[in-house]
Length: 185
Image 1 (tube, rainbow, N blue to C red):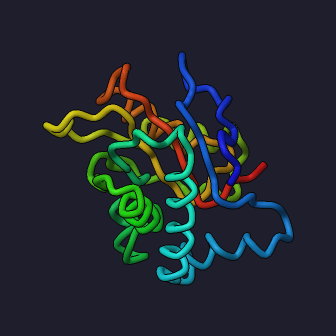
Image 2 (image 1 turned 45 degrees about the vertical axis):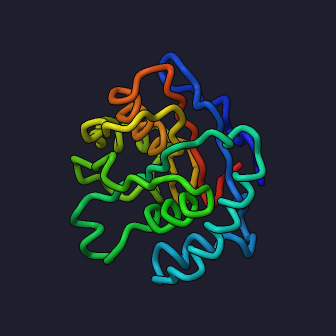
């Protein structure tokens, strides 16, 4: 596991508490097909299987021992409707199950439809998802450490935009970490 992977990616004024990924996404790697199979080929069982591995690795890491809420990066409702599911939610639910903590798929919503990020430059990715997320009202329960989950960590633009939305609803001292099935180095 790429522990603390890209943890130095800065959000305005602060860093993610921790960042982790199960797989390193490299050109030509056979692992590249895993997130693609989940996202585009409806292979939810493979997504769950690898999310379980991610959850087990996170459970072994002291950095993630106090995670008490798992939040998936949401899709816009139109994309979720077309696809039939949110791949990040599939992953987040399994990770939460392994960590034995609640999963909150409605803690964030994508309030603006964005273009696909696959062919955008780093700067265009950041602009594309800026202010695309809104946090729901805070739950009544106390939260100290949130784990934000997505399928792929490339430039960090999507996770940063989602992080900022969560941060507005959950100010410090709540820590927010990120985890992805795979990450590009």
